[in-house]
Image (cartoon, rainbow, N blue to C red):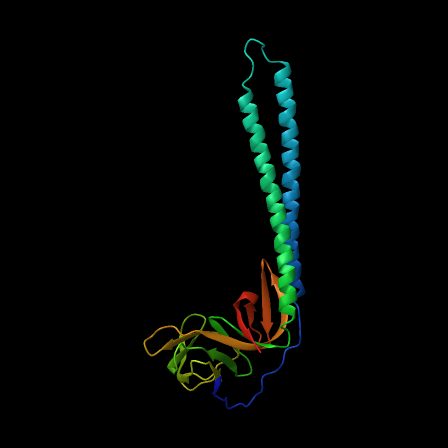
Length: 238
């Protein structure tokens, strides 16, 4: 069972809903990175093949012109051939790994796409205030008072509130107010939750999924409050 604790802002503004959007530039950048890696592997394979051909030509020339009374040491040639084969295997492994990453990302994108429109809870060390509202899900091991601390990106303490949290999960909403009684502008702030003994308490940010996108080797999920979290950080969905 989830207990709900709410702090309502004076402005009474309601949280707007963000429409589904996938950032084309980030997707293009990720695809470009994969294409660059593939091109690098192709170039390395071509260079290796060229070097191997040069090596074999030199080997044949040396064998044809060697002194019969002092033949060349074949073990050296064998060692060099083994080195060429080892490098070729590494290049092939890199190519296969790049392909595997692309396939994995494609599967993750399909997984994340199924979350669009659903409310999720994601692990994060920051919270995004939008329209004077930001919601956290507090998950202490045992019911009791916990302290929610909000600070600026530079680490300046802004707001501290004590909340009676349940071990089954407690929803807490921040209205952007500070200890000094002022209201903070919308934006991203650091957040930490501790129990009466000063130990960290697990928590997650809550929002509705509005879109997904690739970012390098990761898949990011966009929430309707403007915050982005990694797909792997999502702990639950409703």
